[in-house]
Image: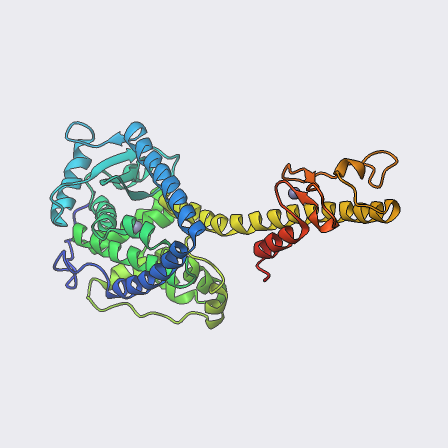
Length: 400
Ligand SMILES: [Zn+2]
Ligand SMILES: [Zn+2]
């Protein structure tokens, strides 16, 4: 590693307590309001609450398995294991006022350059992919930036917010914008930990340009892509993405040198319109997949009761038709014989009024009360008379 460039301490990042961008606070309040409304709506419907609990349980299991995978399969970094990286990590934790450093793991992941933070049952994890470690070096300032970024996620309780604010995070425009502000805040944590803007941008350039040539790329030239590419699709990509684009992140990092926020070039206005239909939460760290499971779970929670109602209504309809058929046979027998039949069996069978006994889908059988004088008294042992079924049908379909 070359140490020729003197570290350039950004003037705007002088205290570890003011690293999150103010925008994050604003989005937090909005996401909180959306989430409270959504959770309340869910809690007010019995099914909603039940399914929310079931899916919270599965989410917990899934997250537990992810963290178990890390603990069992990834390499736990310590004084004995990868001591250089461990020393860098402890330095970063101390710099960011973290008294008890979370467990750090290195995970082989087939060439992917990334790192992420996770949390389960009160235990926090920071994970660096092995190729990223190889690309940046265990004691590099670039690595300090990456570790600082992940510690930023844990310090800002983003993992917890991912669960509690899930409805806000899947809200189009708001969710992705909120998560982009997380990344911007965490990049500032990283830059503060690294105390070196050049090294921080180099880490970003490796993410974008790969480990071979990433380090030699020109940060300013890459940042200019953010200004040059302002078309509809780039704007839509930005608005629906949970990460700021890498060129935007480099732009923001470079701006930290002077402390003057980077100019925000306008986006294509039509992109906002289209992004309204794109729910939040696209690709990213594995933890994002969990949010996706929650979305599917919530949709299922809404769909399953509706499906059950449709099924119940169709079963009632079948039973009602059966009773109508038996009623018609009853009336015909009454007409022909001059007296009402005394059992259903008199009506059903070969050569009788109804050839075969109709089948109730819920296993009910049809009975005629002793001394019945009207076909309206025919009843299913499960569903009751025609009138009973009509009431049940109205209740199931919401008609009154
Ligand atoms: Zn991040
Ligand atoms: Zn029935």
